[in-house]
Length: 193
Ligand code: AMP
Image (cartoon, rainbow, N blue to C red; front, side, top):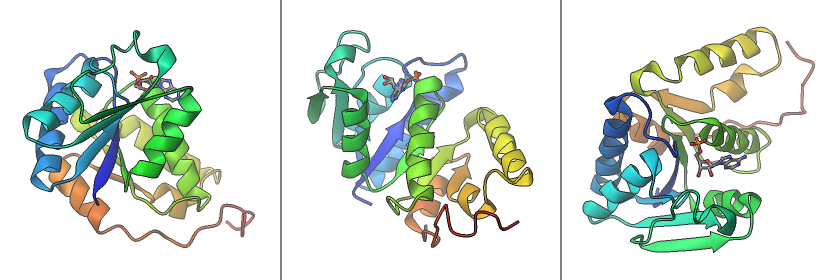
């Protein structure tokens, strides 16, 4: 993997562990010579991971819609800042540029971005690994929700298993490096139990 897209909060979160996890992931990316692609903000966990990768000598590409340049305080010190016209364009570019996707703790935007890229994986639009860093069990209830969605037969287990979940950056990156995409087709066998 040459570049990884990290989705994460534009807020820092309540616990210092969330910011610490961004720093730990940044260090691991730099050690592995993997560039960061992210939303281009200088605030919250987004700003922290960008600053830490840059401080370690790594490469950071930010992609931000013009309408959010002021609101999310776009980062002026990145390797590259790509200003686009819309959220859709932002996500398409981030997806195309990256070899895998990680969600750190975040809010609605983070969750939306992760689930979009995961559904594209489910549909076979890409074969790149999608992963969650489950810091402080932040995403445990979301994982339980997905287990229930499988139990209730709205999500196939082969699709929910595409989401890699770990609580340490090094383990998460190892599992992404070793990821083999399943042969999936959302619509084939949709009535199978
Ligand atoms: P949040 O997790 O809500 O703090 O947001 C994290 C990032 O997701 C920010 O850069 C937001 O601009 C972005 N975001 C918010 N809503 C959306 C959305 N509907 N689609 C894509 N990105 C979004």
